[in-house]
Amino acid sequence: MEALRRLVVLRHAKSAWPPDVADHDRPLAERGLRDAPAAGRWLRAADCIPDLVVCSTAERARQTWELAAEQLPDRPTVRHEPRLYGADPADLLAVVRETPPDVGTLLLVGHNPAVQDLVLLLAQEALSDALERTREKFPTCAIAVLAQQDTWPAVAAGRALLTDLAVARGRE
Image 1 (cartoon, rainbow, N blue to C red):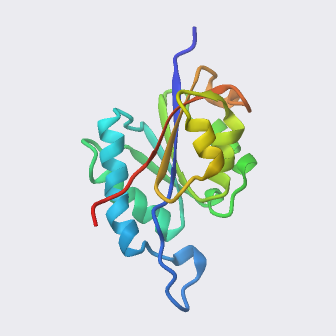
Image 2 (cartoon, one colour):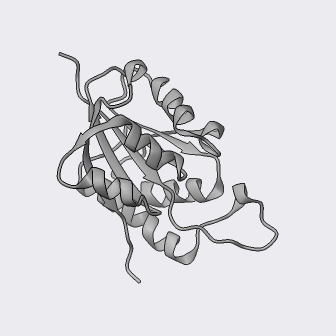
């Protein structure tokens, strides 16, 4: 029997819209700066520490991961992947399928609508109401955890179980 693999999908925290700043370079807003560390605390509390992080090259995604990672006991390997910016679910799936075989938990840090669509593509069923909630909305700093037995290259639509859905929020 294959080992269980977890794919954790994190939508970047709330971003700012400063004038004259390219979309790729937009930083986190005040709320995003509060919420991103809460994502790291949630990952730690849920014992969902990634072996590998694949993060969009967009500034808001990079900041989200850096602030989240500060809350973890150890820093996992991070790969900044340009394909995650402006991606569609097929692009994200291609990146997931490239994951090295020794990775048990992969964390993607990306953007909507692609991250929400990826979760909906992969999840066949969910524990509790997580699938319905994902269909309704995948807000900034949402974290979805998908469990599956397939090897990374074999990850396919409708074969994962959505085990958790959380929205990390920091204190005001």
